[in-house]
Length: 318
Image (cartoon, rainbow, N blue to C red; front, side, top):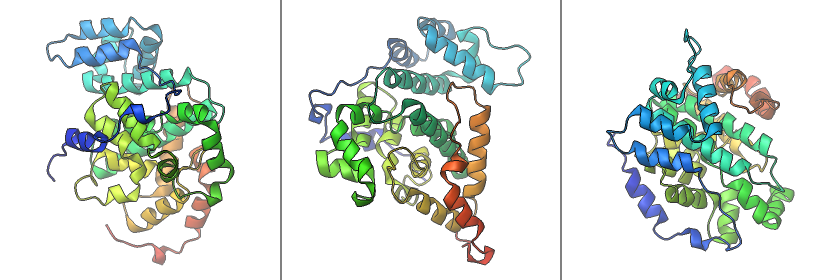
């Protein structure tokens, strides 16, 4: 498969849309200054870890999250990382950048209140999707770290949009059965844009990497992206599959049913095993997001249905 030109995909998709199309009353969040500086400085191949860690350390919260993440991820270390520089050395610049972007974006959104979305539940679900996307990326033999970051950030603008446009989004939730299949369809019909397009545009303004912008942009494409000849083996496809998981807004009305179908059609994709893996890893992670509502509980009905499906009814199509 030829290499994907993420810049071209991003440019074509955003060529007819600008953030100016959003309501002027909408207060868009800003990426923390330290994250923006880190991204800018890390573009220089000659930038030292000392320089980069100095940027991180200007933000105490960011430094603590980085250390917590590294010391949790590298459990077998004899000595824990005690500085941002040691943490960056262990993760590497690219993985550090993805982690800092994800953490910074979360901080920017969490600082905002939402009348419709419970922030703790929202980020709990986002983390479940991120872990799920990473596992799917491993099956696809593609970039698991990018898939994780892409899924974690795919809906990052929804708390802001649903708060500032509360009446529109609450109507979607309160009458879900009579609304379009996906939230993005509803938004497009109502606004002429959706949260994937708006989120990708803001991510581009933040100067996030094109491949991450595209994961946000394409996350609502579901199984359609998985069978795309150019994108089907990319992190974006893994993110799109993870986006079918349930959440507060029921963004994909038949998302679980589609995942159950994939379970039957793709032998390597065991929905049961993936859900168990997500819950285990979620419980083991120390990211400040509780797991009070495990994915297995969210998917209980589908898991029960799969358990009742005779083995000879499961397809063997690869």
